Length: 318
Image (tube, rainbow, N blue to C red; front, side, top):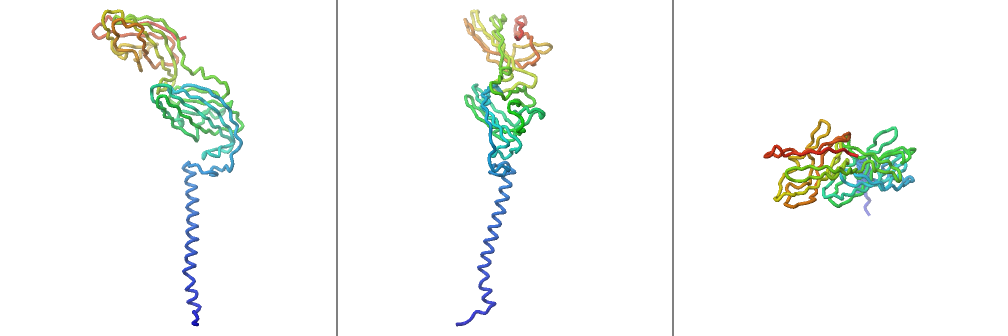
């Protein structure tokens, strides 16, 4: 039998060696790519277990609150708080203390309401002021009649009790409210307040009765500007004339005077016309006023074709 020279034997073994080398090279490449993708995902905020340095979840203390307030016309309930050294499912977690809020927003109005918690929410932390959320579901989009649950995480030192904190709602240019994170805490100071009234205006042949004035920091879809609030007047109208009366839009004739300011309506549901014999037809007129204002005059301006037809009444808030 012919013998294969040693040099040829070595050549015959090289293809197999090359295949093994290629396989090892591919495996190494995949490992490098995998590690790089793992790192990139963590940097981009995609949660990967263990990337935030927490191999297991530290103990969590949960406190039920169920405190409800209003923001942009929606009802917001602070359902609960959770406190831990860190949260394993949060890629931005600190390891020396975190607080998680569970919030429920409900839109009971007929207007779509939206906001972004990244700019509209902060935790008031002693010695640190307002701390913004670092992780969670920030965007809220509520169609009429819909609700949404959101989770927000804040870095808070573990040595601070949750009861020392407050949730601030409202961006920098909005009227803000601060809700203490304590069981049975009241948010009543931020709820709308109504003052009964009984002002009478005789205008355009119609009897207008000013029934009440309601003040609040929000109306459906809007939060008042910083230092301001919404004043909504409820008015009842009777038509004792023998014909239909058409005073027109309240945006044209209704004004609110307070101090040196005369304000036009922001919104209104008062009809532009009233049928013969109409009684107790009710609508509202809303104005944006300073939170420092307390005394007002409701003024109905003269109609273009009748400069003598005007009326006014003075009222104060309780």
